[in-house]
Length: 57
Image (cartoon, rainbow, N blue to C red; front, side, top):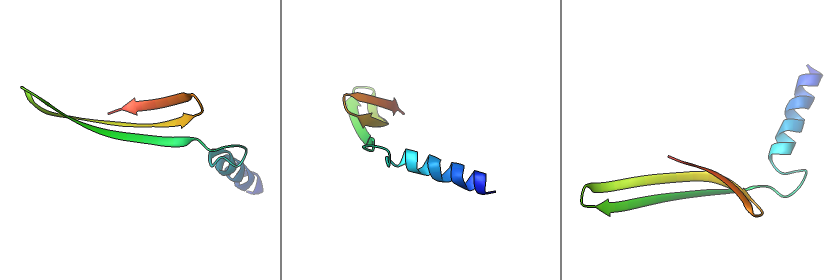
C-alpha cells in the first residue's frame, strides 16, 4: 500500500511541475459566419517554451 501511495505522490508532483516550470494550458473558441450558416470551433492544448500541442474539437 505504501508503494502505491508513493507512486501516486510522485506522479502528482511530476504532473504539477514540481520538477521544473509547469506547462501553460491554452484554450480558444472560434465562431465563423459563412453563406451556409454559423460554425464553431474549440481548441485546447498545452504550451512549454516554443513547443505547443493541441486538439481542435
